[in-house]
Length: 316
Image 1 (spheres, one colour):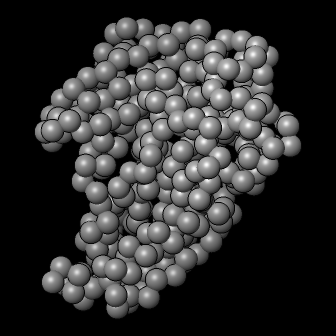
Image 2 (cartoon, rainbow, N blue to C red; image 1 turned 120 degrees about the vertical axis):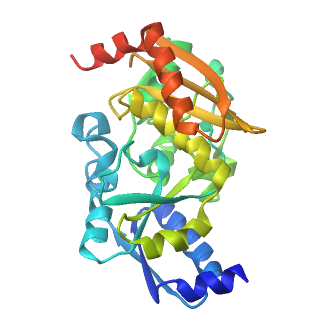
């Protein structure tokens, strides 16, 4: 009965804006399939777009504008009416959206962990000193340098298959990738070892998909609510609130991961210097009904431990 009601109220057509990488298109098609189940009378299309973040592969995100480079063209498609919704990896979304937009749904999370990928070594601890490890993330770089100071952490940009191809070509001894992306692309067999959060804390929202639309599209927001996974949405809200409170961006080595524990959430977070010389971390448990308050409170606790000094140094 719910499907019939939602289908009757849904728009006749919904166009999904997506980046054109294989992973992004998988994500868009996944959401399209979910929508087709809830809205059987709605025609659903996908508008593939190349973002500036996809074009600028010659520099790190921290130096060319950050995560917003992956969503600008998609949001412009929403504003112009060429698309109705946009699908993103939540970890790629800026921590604060412009007021014209709404994060209308967060899908159930895939594996949030990072994956160690290597054809020659079983684990980070097995890598000889001086081994080259590729990653595009300051968050990963900070944690790797803190735990494995003898490794050479080198920049790695491009889509998942490009990064794996560079590994296979011998450009790197190992790479660190999001497990969710590998699994969604059917590349789980490339994972050498999954890194537990205690060893490498994920990015806020890692493994979850976010569906964005114009804030004024109340018709869409009502329909998209069917795609929202409440438990994941609460965890993601706590993680993103933590990051916002610490001015989280591509320029800040920061991680956050929340897990549901009954009626509570347990949130872990860290912020550190890019070279791993200083890391401040902590965890907090609180009611799941107010996830953003939990994130803000943990951020305040880390600031009291010295996170503010780390953040100030990053701005100089």
